[in-house]
Length: 603
Image 1 (spheres, rainbow, N blue to C red):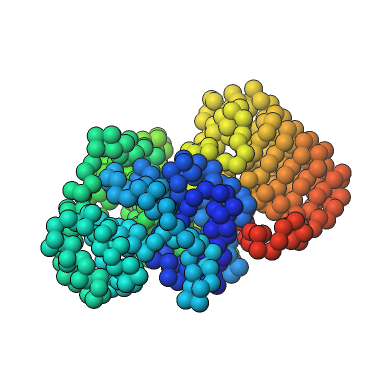
Image 2 (image 1 turned 135 degrees about the horizontal axis):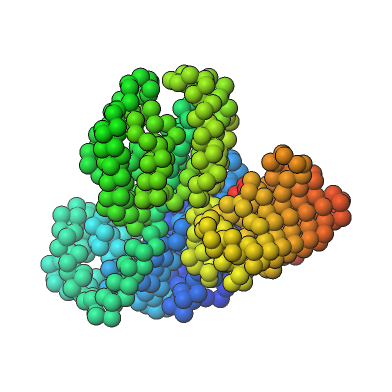
C-alpha cells in the first residue's frame, strides 16, 4: 500500500469519527490499495458548510499540509494535501468534497439522494474496505452524468459504468430515464451499459450533454451564485507564478523542469516561459546565442529605450491577457528569468540605455507571486558553465543576492548542492507559500487563529509595506524582518525580534519577548526553526542553530546549539528529551484509531 492510500484511509477514519454523513463516489474498485486520481467525497450539506474547519483539523491531526483549495462549484471544493514521503520527495493526495452535485450551477443530484442508502464498501470476500459508498444505481448515474458533462468517456470509464449497471439494472434504468426521458437516448445508454460497448455513446456525447442540461434548468438564484463564485475565482486566483533567477551555471533550467514535474499534482496545468509572457510570438524561441550571451555589442540608446518599451508593454499586456487567466484556471507558470534580469545583466539583452530607468520602470511590471533566486559560489558556476568570465560570474552572484534582499516574497536557494536537494528546496518554498496564502485567504482553515494585531503585523511585514510595516513594528515593539511564508502563531505579538535570515517552518508558535537572531557581531547566521516548534515567552535562539520539528523551547530559555526533534529545552541549552509522538500516541489510543505519522515538510 502506497502513502497516498494510507493518508486516504486516515481521512476516511477521521470522517467516520466526525459523525457527519459522508460517502465516496466514483470508481472505487481499487480503493484503498490504489488511489489513481482524486478522491470524490460527498458530505451532508450541513457538514459541508464547515468543510474548511474539518480539513484543517485533519491536517493538524495527521501532520499533512493543505496546499490547494479550489472552489470549482458552489457546493464543491477541490483540495490537495501534501507531505514529505519516506523517499524524501513530496507526496500529494487530491480530494474533491461536495454536497449537492452541481455542474455549472445546475443541480443534477441532491446530496440527500446520494447519502440516504449508503453502505460500507466491501471487497469480493465480503470484508469492509473502510469507507462508505452509495447504491450501485446512484453510483452509475453520478458517474455517467459526470463523464457526459465533461464529454470524456474512455474504455476504463465504460467498464466501471457497466459493472455498476450489472449490479442493479432496474435501478440504473430508472435513474437514466429521469435525465434522458427521450426513449432513443435512454435506450442507447442502456444498450451500451449492458454490452459494455460505449462507442455509440461517445459519438453523441454533445447531444446527451444538452439533454442533461435541459433536465436540470439553471435557476436565477443558481446563476447569481455561479457568477459570485466566478468573480471570487477571478479576484483570488488559485494558480501561481514563480520567477527563477540566478547567474549562468546556477541550474535554472534543470530546477524548473524538476519543479514543473514534481508540483504538477497541485495545479491543473503547468507552463514554462522564458523571460517574459511573449503575448506576441509565444511560440518563438528567444533570439541570440545562448553559449555566448555577451558576444554581441549593446544597442544604441534609442534602440535600447525602444526595447525597454517593448518589454514593459509585453509584461503589462501579457500579464492581463495571458498570465492572469492562466492563474484563474489554477495553472503553475514558471518564468526562466524575469524583467529584473535586465538590471543585473544588461549585456545579455544588449541594453545600452540608463539602468536607473530600468529600475524605475520595474514598479510598473507585474511581478510573480514568488521569486526563487539560485545562488552558488563563482567556482561552482564556472565548473558548470564558462559562458562568461569568472569575474562576471562573481559580479552576477553578488548582484542577484542583493536583488533577493529587496524582492518581496523572495527566497534564496543553495544551488551549489546537487539537483535533487536544490529542486526540493525550491519546491518546499512554493508549497510553504501556497499554504500560507490559503490560511491568509481563509481564516477558517487555521486551527488556531492569530489576534488581529498579529495578522496585521505579519501581513505588512510579509509584503514589506514601507510605511505601515514600520508603523506596526513601532506600535507592537516588534522587529520582524524574515519572510514568513508559512503561517506563524503569535498569541501576544509584543517585543518579538526575528533576524532577516531566519527560516521558520509550518505552524510555529512564538510567544512574546522572543528573540531569533545572530549570536556574534558582524556574522549574519540565523536560526532554522522547523515545523511545529513552540517557543516560550522571553526565549532567545541565537546563531546558526536548527530547532528540530515539534521541539519546545521553554520560557526564558537560551539556545545556542541544535535541538533534536520533539525535545524540550529549559534554561541555558539544557535539553530534556521527550518520547516520540508515535510512542505517546500508542499509549493513548488503539493502533487502528491512531492516525499515521507523516514527516512534515522541512523548514
